[in-house]
Length: 220
Image 1 (tube, rainbow, N blue to C red):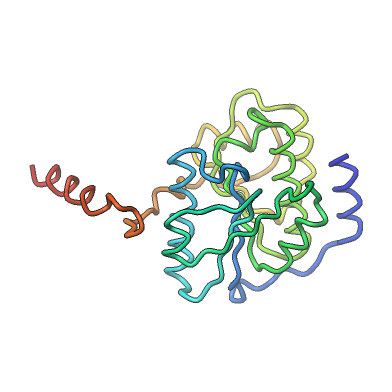
Image 2: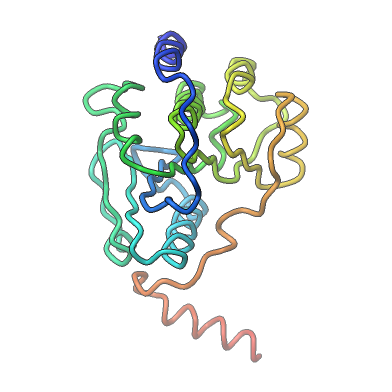
């Protein structure tokens, strides 16, 4: 059903002209797990680092999270992040997802460990399909650095081979990068995990104590 909907949507879109990078003012982040939003500290770090990077470049940027349901987190308040609970509400629909995405200039998917179909073939396929469709709309579509295991699901490989070359695909380690290119025949970039861009956040209650602890270890 997903593949049929994808083909129908793509046939209707065609290929729209790409937006110039200077017009990037509205950003949508899609978590790797849309229900829990933050599964691990690593996922949290990737999202916060991207939010901090966007805000550093443009303090007036509009940033939102596309989730399954409402979500609360201190960082959302600190950086004025909106939450759009329409990932599968009431049911998942590529057309409805693209209606949300069309209001943004750039869509960033937190790839993490979820793009090779190991945890959920369906969710992985949905993320790839959304990235492809967004790129065809002329929007900036990026899958943030993700890992890729040695035995990816063959169905995911077939999906990836159909993805538009406009999608920015980032692998977060050289081994995953080599595996991805060999399995898919697609070129991608090897980039450091977005979490390495993370800065301290005043929204975390323990931050002052953590920074003090780090300083004492450094001077010791």
